[in-house]
Length: 340
Image (tube, rainbow, N blue to C red; front, side, top):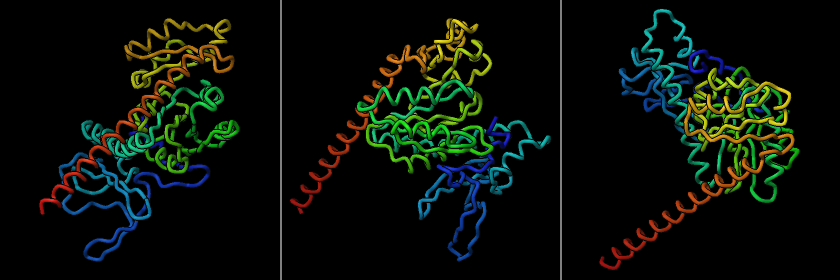
């Protein structure tokens, strides 16, 4: 999978503009002794026994992000190609390969947490739509945006290896959209989404839908900061897809079975597909629909409306708690001034 094969080493672009990939860039650093360098580096005092690939992300002046990945054996600092390439060393212990995978994901999780906080601050309900290529994700998004127009603001982050075709379709509906092209990469990661989010600037209380690259393998492992992964399975695929790609169906909270209007023309067993998916995740919710005809769309829209309402309520609670805390602190300061 992506954490070891290095397939994410392509050129990433957001709306056609090249962006900095986590750990993939050179960034100038000036140390206390006046030395300046531009490469992966080890902070003084780093733990040489830390797991390989242990990473943290931090923000520099100019709003640029930088991550560090360390080799736990030598203390040397590794770039992503070094870390990923080392997996293919036949002499590398299997335990160390596991650490590489875990810590590359940990680096991604740091950015995902930032995205999650940004969504929460705005009261955004964020979804990560995942599927095989051709499942009908973009058609479903267009139909959803049209159905929610005037009720809920919707914006979209589109993920594809190349072209802006899907983002163009979304923009034609009047909704905001940012296209992320992953180049050789086969999935979106949290840093890409965070950079797209800054450009997108979703309104407070908006529904943010992230259409991931068509792939039922690697996107399962990468948290983008979303509230839920929604896996879309079209009836033109096999009913046994959940058995063949268990990680994706295990990671999802909702499965949409799309293109139900084609059921009379294909050999697809809906009951079997649901049963197989729930072997992976027993509590998985399922909605059957057709993005083309609109059949079953009401159930999907109702699910979205509940999620948006919950996200807005959570933000409102946070604001109330914060205001109460500020009032308490101000009262204490007033009392201290009075007693002084």
